[in-house]
Each structure stands twice: as structure tokens, then as C-alpha cells.
Length: 114
Image (cartoon, rainbow, N blue to C red):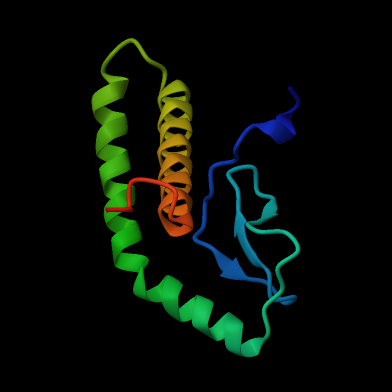
């Protein structure tokens, strides 16, 4: 597995670059495109930025909770970087499962059907 397979922790919140792509700066100092191949026009960019700004306080809450979780877990014989990797992998898995569940419900093939 090369370094491209490992998630890079964002140092900044998502922003739109000059080409209308949603990007962030990673802990390695490089800029990453969140969704490659999606370009937004001025109106779409404005809507995305408005949604991101409105969600800012919620993101700060999530960030604070993550820091609290890391403090608790790091008291165990677990290195901080290992704890971060565990947190990110767990969140990614949970969010992907939630997305799959939403797709099943939207398709009418599952839990959402009476």
C-alpha cells in the first residue's frame, strides 16, 4: 500500500479553489480535491460556501468531541497517531454504512418500507 492509500488529516476546512473545486489543505501541506471531476459554477459555489459556513459551528462541535475522544483513548497504551487512524477509519466506515442504508431506503428495497 502506498502513501496515496492513507487518508490525510485536513488542517483547514473545505474551501473552493479558483477552478470551483472543493479542496482542503492536508497535514502534509498539500492541497487535496475533495471530489475530483466536480466543477461548480458561481451560483453552485456560493450555495456550497453558504452551506459550509452555516455548518461551521456544528463542525467545531464535532472537532471538539473528536479531541475529547482522542484524549480519553490516548490515556491507554495507544499512540496518538494510532488513535487518530482508528477514529478516521471508524467514522469513514460508519458514514459509508449510513450512506448505503440511505440508498437502500431510497430504492425501496429495505428498512424504509412498511
